[in-house]
Image 1 (cartoon, rainbow, N blue to C red):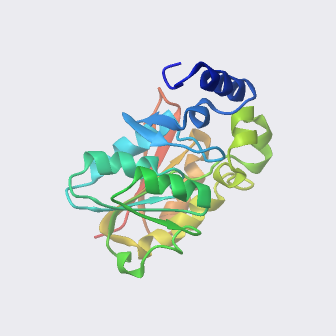
Image 2 (image 1 turned 90 degrees about the vertical axis):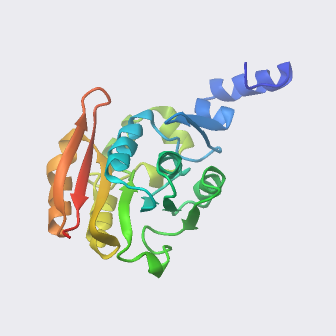
Length: 229
């Protein structure tokens, strides 16, 4: 009601929500870390549990650090980090053109690229990234059908489906991270409790020292890898 400008617009918004469209896509924004993140129809809606990933990343970052938000979606993680880190140099990338358009709205002073994982990032970032945060798709393919209809029907499959065990994208990011991280830099990826052993093993296999941060309240875990100095 507060978002609609006219009764007719309110009726149209209610109809879209009743038809199954996620509330955030109906309104055009999602609340995330105290920010309004622009979200268009068909774009992955940032989850409140991912605020835990942001808190872990912010605790590791410093003034004027180089931050990369990979699999950025609407750019919520990058925008939240930019809001709390003074003079951070924020870069974000996603393969979905609709998500990239939203991310450019949410990161007007950042650098947003379209492409597959590291591919679109400028070569000048290699070896300079201090914090690389990624909210990757980690739902196993066989479990996509159990997601709420809002996700299954209105968010891109590529933002949800993590492959047979849910860790395909995580492994690719972990394998490539050492080439982009600065010495002592960190990679942080959100995952589920049951996926922690294999996720941490992927970090270790890439040469990163891995540890895990957990939030029981949000039922989420973040695997944190550090490139040796």
